[in-house]
Amino acid sequence: MTTTKFRNEIAIALNERGVEVRADQMGDLLLAFERWPKGDWRPVFDGLADGGCQAEHWGYCLKGAGRVHNKDGSVSEIRAGQVYHVPPGHTFETLEDMDVVEWTRPHAAYEKDVEVMMANFHGMKAVAPPSRR
Image (tube, rainbow, N blue to C red):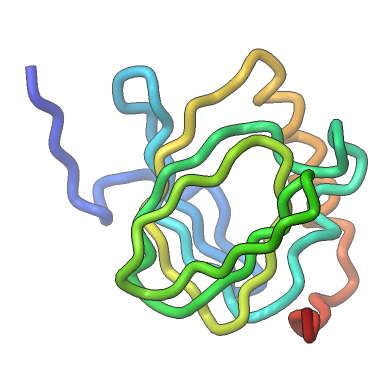
């Protein structure tokens, strides 16, 4: 059976500091509509294995731009209109306000990682501007 949903039909998982994440399980993947304001979000990943998110993501950038920092030291930019694949072991910052549709393949410890990221998110005093690279 085919599953379809409109963005506004998906429950809000996070809505603060200008970040809005709507997420729902669809088949084996987690679908999310995400809105991130400009800023350096790398501190959210402190305390995770390899210092980064261990999930694999595929997505489409609807608006804005971001920068992904990978565990191998490479840095990639994602811009509006691009599709992307982000391997495990990454952090990110947004160069402009950014809206994406993203699919995630949760890994065995995904729920625990999300708990760590949420605690870090709520503990941030302020979001720093993006790095100059």
